[in-house]
Image (cartoon, rainbow, N blue to C red; front, side, top):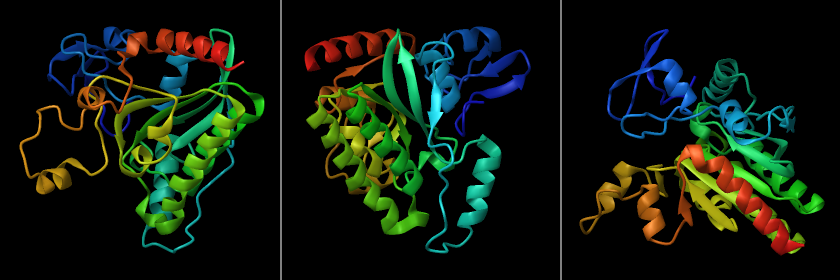
Length: 269
């Protein structure tokens, strides 16, 4: 239900929080948007759950659904992993893109789903992000992208790394057209995604305690030459460092995005 890192199910009525390990009533947990009422831990969402809690009811219309990755490099076991991920999640890749309305305002959106191969960015994910931004530029409507990724998809090699440049170039098209672009960092937002389209948005929001960084925690620990803060590579550290604009709790995310969209549209037209 909540992707790879999901609340532990005890039975049909209870779940266990991944943060504090407390037992929670499933109904209350879901009504609280999959946030622990005890410790505030934000559990990961599927793309569909994210769309349902963010956009106007029934307004999301998927685009680019037919795009599928191919095993150009004939990377060992890649085809099998793709098919397994498709069967597990019901989607063709780690990003679902389309159009929706947010309190009546049309937006172009892309939502990453970490449960599909760790949200990794391959050719299809990069193409969907690019098309999302290009639709926003063409129609001069806001783009909202929810990030959730461990980084580039190694099985696609340079084809994956090329998406960093392609998606960043698409951001420039939004700027030229005066279309606002908002990125939302969820847990985790890492590596090639962070180093490309995620970090160059007009406004960057993040959910509390989301993992945000370039290298993984173990790699970063090996490279440390000085003591780092306890919240290093967390959204709160990124906020203090000026990388993001605001940390927003999930229950306030929809209203925050709605306000931002209206302000940015007013300023761009």
